[in-house]
Image 1 (cartoon, rainbow, N blue to C red):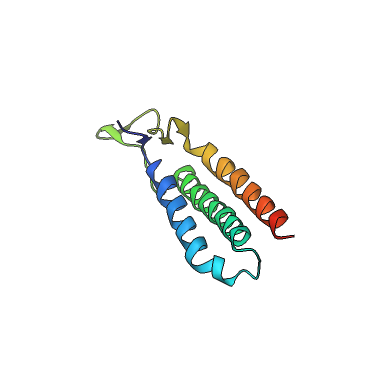
Image 2 (cartoon, helix red, strand yellow; image 1 turned 45 degrees about the vertical axis):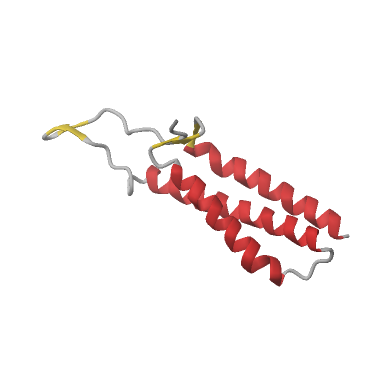
Length: 114
């Protein structure tokens, strides 16, 4: 079962990269006690990083840098570009979804630290 179409897989890779960066680099730099609050804030930051990377992929598609319309025949281009999605959600919606989850994680972690 394929869960992505087009460039949608890059959203997942960006989210994984953001979470790894946040959990292994940023969490140790946070002066927050207890440790679970720092982890919650780091996961929220990871989701925000993933949202920025997903926005970058969407902008690259928007400006036709990575997703150039294919030619059906020489000199004749296709009417529309192939769509990209992850879990049947369009690529344009993923930055907003990840940003909301990230901000919630940061807020919840900050309230636990107080």
